[in-house]
Every structure is written in C-alpha cells, then in structure tokens.
Amino acid sequence: MRLGLVNPGAEPWTLAGAVLVDATGEQVELARWQEAPIPANGAGAIVVGIEGERAQLGCPCTLKLWEAQGPRTVTLGNVTFPVSQQAAP
Image 1: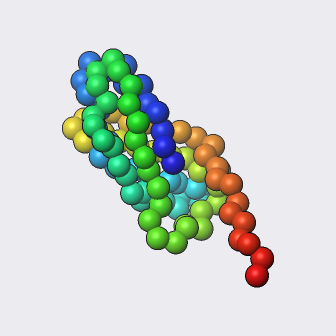
Image 2: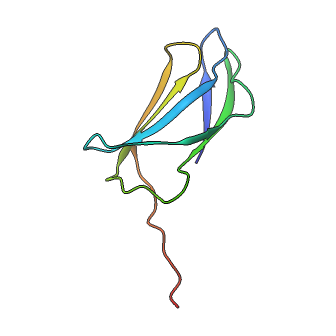
C-alpha cells in the first residue's frame, strides 16, 4: 500500500521499519520503500507490502512505522484489506 505522510517535525523522517499487528498480537514484518526522506515540515510517500504469500492475520490490524534515527513512530489502527477473489476455472 502507498501512504502519503506529513512530517510536522523539524528534522527529516526516514522509514526504518514497518509491521502489521493483529488483535492477537501476531506480527508480520513488511517490505518497505521510500524514495527520499520526508522533509521537515513537508510531505512525502512511502510504500509498504507483504512479500511472498499473504499472511493469515485477523484484521482489522494496526500498522506501525518507525524512523531510522529517532523515536518518532506512525501508528494507524483499524487497517483492513479487501478479500482477494480468484477467477473460476
């Protein structure tokens, strides 16, 4: 998924890690991509996703993102994903 983020801080924000956590505490580490740090008092985008087979999480989940060089985190609750439909043979 692609997320647009606003950085109200005085320092740039660089994504260091991302996980999805379900209601039971099960976690799945996410692959992540960020073209450039989000500038201070600016906006930018990041992309996170599950590599390989889709995890069997009981969503809604919590998405947790954290920065490389500091304590600032982003936490989004009530994250759900559409059920994928396979074509009939």
